[in-house]
Length: 139
Image (cartoon, rainbow, N blue to C red; front, side, top):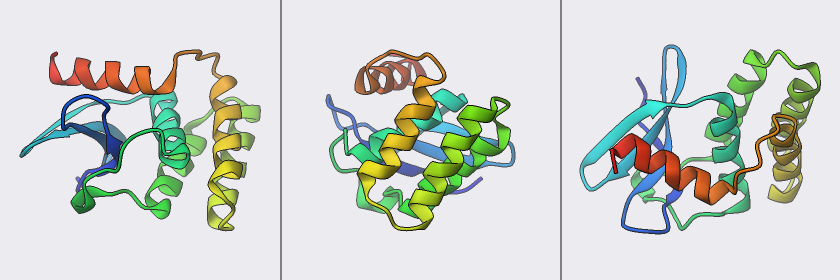
């Protein structure tokens, strides 16, 4: 397992949300103080975290765990590799290309939002992330 990477700090409290990579892919990581809680993360949640990263929807993450563009490109690549829907896979591949080409956050986020909409998920992103963090931490 790799060190967890943080996408951002959640709006309430001091907890941060991010990802942890293991042999099977990625898991949701929630950090609070010295404690890191891991939970399952599906493809939609991974895309939501990538969107939150590029749209800077959350407060700054802790520097010790801060995710990089390369980290998020790996996450999106992983999701694209496992995607069975050709249209969604194409949009995710476009997002990876945009990251790799150094395009602006708006271009990358646009591809990710389009891929996520293809999944018919309508939940507000920050609300979704807070809810999943609370579920993982048993709150």
